Image: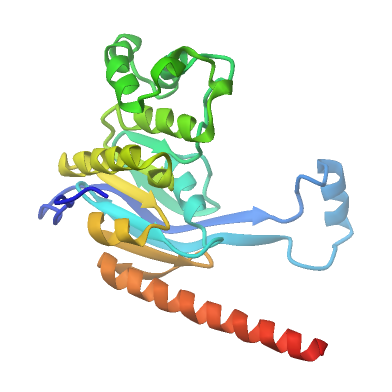
Amino acid sequence: MVEGVSPGPVQPGAPTVIEVRDLGVRYSLRLTRKNTVRQSFANLLRRRDGPSSFWALRNISFTLTKGESLAIIGPNGAGKSTLLQALAGIITPSEGQIDVRGQISSLLTLGAGFDAELTGRDNILLAGAFMGMDHREMARRIDSIIEFADLGQFIDASIKTYSTGMRARLGFSIATAIDPDILLLDEVLATGDQVFRAKSQARVLELVRAAKGIVLVTHDMNWVTEFCNRAILLEQGHIVAEGDPAEVVAIHREHSEQVKALKAAEAARVLAAAR
């Protein structure tokens, strides 16, 4: 963990970089990997029992101000990653609106967008092209990206030889090297060895101190309370708490303990009934 640094308070009057209004994302339950389009259409015509869709997110509204480090926390299945994908433009909302003002860089899926046959060095240039970076500018930054990733001779090996952690290191190095206005991160700070995790955390704090906007999904509550200046708790696709990180984390932990107690009671009931 990085010592002695924090994002600090947001400057008064800082501009809004993301505004989310009444966001909803609905997924179909009919079209699955096990069903072809033809089968799913036939099932719809038969009016099979049960819901045809579910809302992964509903009635989500919040703003991100320049200089904020916003943590999105919650139990598995709460809609955290779906929210980040919607902010990144990967998912089109079913309802509501997202207004982004500035350049976004995101690292949501480890190794996403890499060409497995190309080397790490070539993938850096490829990623730059995908992000709309000028080739000469990306070539100017490549040495610092390689140095940060610290992959040694593997930088000239094909990506298919990389471990998950190595892909994450390279992806993080690229995502944070383009000096974005807004950075979206999904659990990447928990990847890699202790030294690289510390480097990653320090780099995120550099971006926050440079008045950038950060939206981070994490299960590391220490990171939330020490290095974020706002937090949102999602449960079942809805915002149930928002505000001071320590207070939101306390609510999350309280709810988690309640869920554990309910599950333990249910397990005890099932065992008792089976005897």
